[in-house]
Image (cartoon, rainbow, N blue to C red; front, side, top):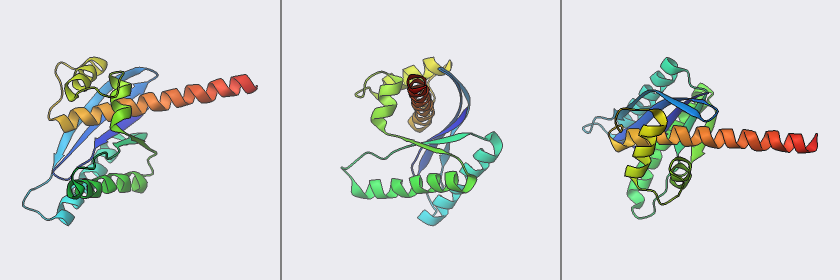
Length: 170
């Protein structure tokens, strides 16, 4: 399964393409969409939309994984990031991609093993899991790869539970 992981935002959107086979993961490509600071919100959102569409066309993912928003301290920031996240969801809908949403807690728990892991711990594990020579930068890129891996783990676990239930019933 090929997964497009996304760490949503407005100024920067991290993305990562990961191939998942059972519990084995490989990074295919990754990067960061940086929107022009001198443009207004509508133009920046369109830039994100167009770039994500191009990534979907280029890599043909089977699934889009997007990090759910989790902050309550700054409502204005949350709303702005929510706009960017909405564009990501729109691309999934437009392209007919199944969507897996993961919380930061799920990402940390899946990747490191506990929900209070630091960004550095998540980054080190992503580097190890994906066999990368160095930690991807900026953090948005590393977060996007972690979202993709966490979504792959979540999907794999869910499939095993369903198979187990069918075996018990059958």
